[in-house]
Length: 421
Image: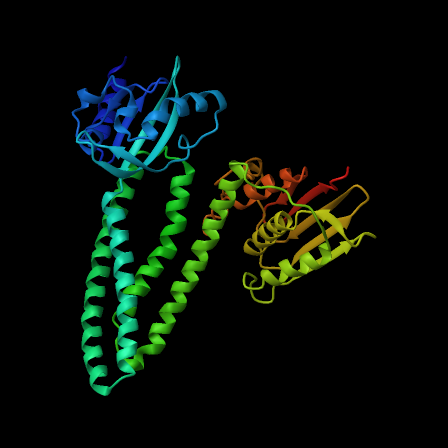
């Protein structure tokens, strides 16, 4: 081993040993091989008390009883539940106390064997803060109801209610200030985690980016609303309420993408066939995209063929059309074309835009989860839409292809056979 390699290993060990989040590795039997000080401290163990033991010693039941079976099932099927995905789980301290943490597990293939690396982030304080906010909101709603009733009674009660409300606003402002501090601390932790582990999955980095923007908007507007306490400031309150609603709508769209992906991967999407007028369906989808279109941007829609009705799953087809049209709108400033051809054995959907196009080197990754082309970094998106579309198309036994030229435009062609063929 060269001196340079030794230095690199020493630096890597120092980084892992000083990491704020816990980092540990296990072999393919679940036996702990390494654990950094942060992880050992999180579970209240010394490192040598954990190393050499099965990782399930850090889990409460039922996870402890099921862990070996889960690991074996993953090795046989490669179907992940946590590995390569990550989620919130419960941990078991040496004292017997359980606590919540975020676990991201990666499979690492070495020259002669496979190991698994886990990154552990304690969620105890975050969950407590969320619970506290929910309780404060519930208390505030109850108190506002009480104050409204008192206002209707007498002017004297109105004055008393105003004094109480001012006190509650101060309490809410204090709670929001605490939440801001916690948010800054969380951002710092996420930033350090990114520096220590540049190989984190695209899921973590994408979700962190997409959720942070609307959440910050919600938090800042909520903080500002607390400062408007007089009646003449109602227009200012309403402006920030609109910002909050817009951010929540954005979050809902992102969550719908993640939920759709989850249902698809877990095989929970069932095809429910029904007779459908595809011309009417397209009209509905076009109306649904009105809020997404820019300026005078239109969707040119045509249907070719002698058929009036087709047999298809309406919900799945709506999802396919909406994703393709919303993508075209997002990456183009000009009109979008949507042409449907009803043939004897199948129907074909072509969605054409004259926008920024997709670089040739990116096209082979187009339907990969969380992938975004190099020329769309400034346009918001999760990188899930086309992956979801492709899975939906496959559920209908169809196929999707893409033809694109950079700075010229893109055409997506979906071919779906009729169920009786």
